[in-house]
Amino acid sequence: MPIARLADLADPAECPRLVVKVGSSLLVGPEGVRREWLAGLVGEIAVARARGQDVIVVSSGSIALGAARLGLDKGGRGSLADAQAAAAVGQIALSALWAELLAAHRLTAAQLLLTLDDLEDRRRYLNATATLTRLLDAGAVPVVNENDSVATQEIRFGDNDRLAARVAQAAQASAVLLLSDVDGLYDRNPADPAARRLTEVHGITADIHAMADGGSGSGLGSGGMTSKLQAAEIAERAGIVLGIANGTAERPLARATCEEIGTLFLPRAARRGKAAARKAWLGGRLRLKGALTVDSGAAQALAGGSSLLAKGITAVDGAFVRGDAVTIRDASGAVVAHGLVEYDAAECTRLMGRHTREHAELLGYAPRPAIVHRDQLVLL
Image (tube, rainbow, N blue to C red):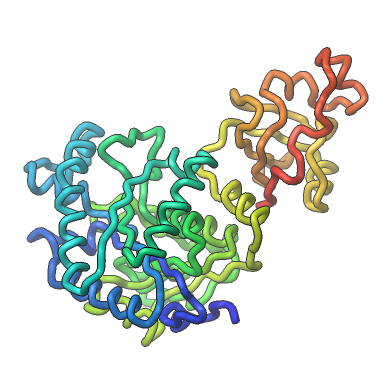
């Protein structure tokens, strides 16, 4: 049976592998590390392990911890140099803290620091998958964070919500639980007395996005509800359930699963097999090198499972080479797919709108039949 409610996240039969994301504002308060709270969470992780679940932690907090130790203002986020320096100091303290508290339950912590490129490049993504799998098989608890000490603005996830969803993809997890400072997604600002919490969401729509607030209320983190919905979209494309729950309370995992307080985002369809895993990786990419705009006929053909042919392309944007990931959008600008292109941008510009039989003459060599083959394309 698939996961259908928050309570299922505590059931090893329904959720054998769970990713738990901990935000900066939960881990670090005005007085420093919330050690007692974190010890309680680690105790809950130990309980989950004892009942047969694999647990992966995605932990923020390195910049906040390092900034406090270095005396940097603005929580260490005043500049990129400050953030990188704070992360370099804070990551040591953060990993040591997790290792110490997990060791008290005879659990071994394993640190993984990832950049956006580590999960956007297919080969490095598979390497991360292999490492996570081996660590879990060996009984360790992977503690993952973005490698903020080297990541620049151009190669950053920017928040650990989306990182958690990508890690869940790489680890082939059953579910992700984002611990936040709110009880879940509300249909309007939670400060409004008329606000209603959504218990379940089946697919992220424009209406769902309209409910989100893009800001991080604490000032310590980098995410908000918008980033959590983006994470839910990434998880959905991989057939992974994602939950949002309030982490400020003691024993936040039990509160979410036993009392079922939170919002559960359920994928519309499960994905299985190597081809599905590859398409989930492609659909969850955050950086794309360009865009192809297509006419209505091509958009319909893509929806029916066809490859993208040059005849249906009306515009080419960006600088990309063969094998790069691009966005495919319809005439209104709506994104309909991601795909890996068979031609570079200049070649696509020469070929767009032209019939396949003309390609050899235009290029001067035997062409490939499609601009984006259906096996290298995922509908969104």
